[in-house]
Amino acid sequence: METTEKIESTDKMAKVNELTNQLLDSPKIISEKLPWNNWTSCVEDSENRIAGWIGKVFQVLALASCIMILFGTLEKLWENSGKMWQGETEAIISAVLSILLWTCAAFPIAQIIRNIGDSLGSSKSNTIGLVFLDLPVAMIKMAGYILAMMGLFVAISALLSFITTLNIVNAMGMDLLVLTEMGSMGTAILFGLLNDLGMTQFGEMMTDMMAGPNMGYGGAWTVAGAIGVFGSFISIVVILVNLYINVMVYQFLYGLASTLVKWLKAPYLPFKSL
Image (cartoon, rainbow, N blue to C red; front, side, top):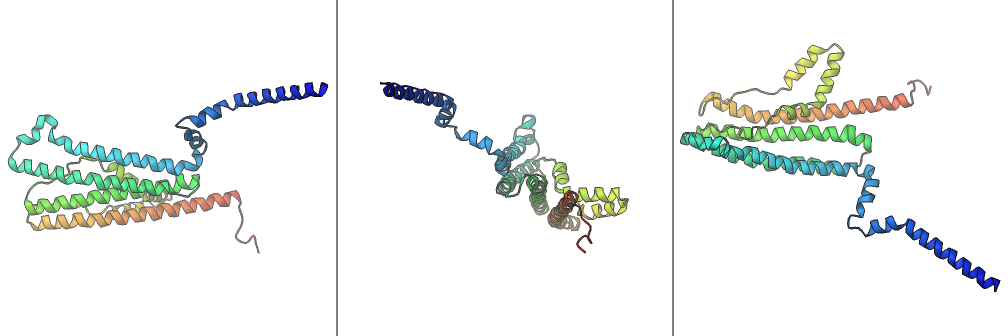
């Protein structure tokens, strides 16, 4: 009889423990049933997904940039109560061609941003390398590629203006200062170090050398106009050269800083092993 009572008591305790465990595990059970149950694991593993999140941000930025460029370019069709359509026929044709040309520029520019995001999203670097090396290099490349792409469309518009005698201008109205500063990140750091070391003149000389040609378009079917068109195409090459120089300089400076940090963590003298 006592044995039976002990068995029943043990079964009741096991049942109580089972119910208690089910109650404690209820949040997990409910979370697994929800359609967004992967969100918890994503948050917990967010450190390992930083590159992927940055890639997603660039994908969103690519779409937003495309929409903003299209809106900023097409806006001229109706802004100021359609003032563009009230001008002379030649001015209207020039404006329409400018809008069409720079509308086409929105898509390759957005694709550049998307490609940079995909490259960052597949990065295998650790957090330090991702934040201080991969991301800045990607920003330099993105700025340089966008400037080169815009330079190409500027050269095409200059060529069309030269051939057709129309005034085909940049209808996008995009401020290039931010892109220029971003694309010069590597040399900006280098020139800052040179200035701190008292080599200001050398830094200014290198800055002038990397500024690229500053040439006007001139008139249609004139020597000055032809030189201006040629200079606009040469500017694309200069932009790309500056891009690769900035990437190499930044990577060199990062490697130098990384080596210095490693040495500070475990300092040694060159003749320590002798």
